[in-house]
Image (cartoon, rainbow, N blue to C red; front, side, top):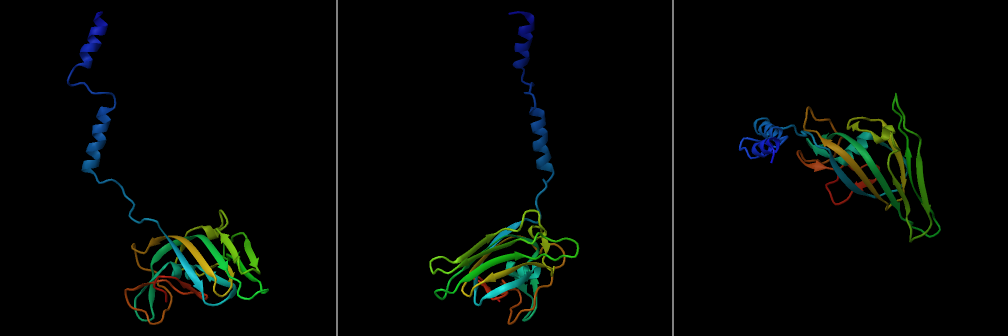
Length: 216
């Protein structure tokens, strides 16, 4: 064995030697143990609400405040409330409209009608009609990609997002992402009737009653 090979072998057997990168590992561990790491203070949450229609609607206009009320409100008194979420976005809406009378068609439709002062969404319309008891009129819609309707919105905004058409007895599902109002002042919610302070509700809007949850 030549001298060069012997020196390399001796170095590899030294107790004080560390593998390449081992010093960096120690530094990272020390940093985590002495400095709390960053974390997400306000998490994005998701919710799916199933609503049952107690009456038919034709092109009923929904504002962002209507959708924020569906996401949730907290009663602050008998007739007052705050929105549960500070900001939210719509991910999807689905409508199933059943046929009630043979030969009488029913329609489900989603018409995006964003009318903000500065930006507007494409006027996309999705619609389906049925005359069969076996097949409801069905629409499954996401907000158009890149449209204002697909963005995050403050719960107190009163601009319209879309108009919905559905039959009496229809089932309407909404999917939302939202952030809780746990940073800063709460956003005042809609007027309610016979509410209880501190209770969490989902607001009935345009004949749509949230199912299997507290609705008001």
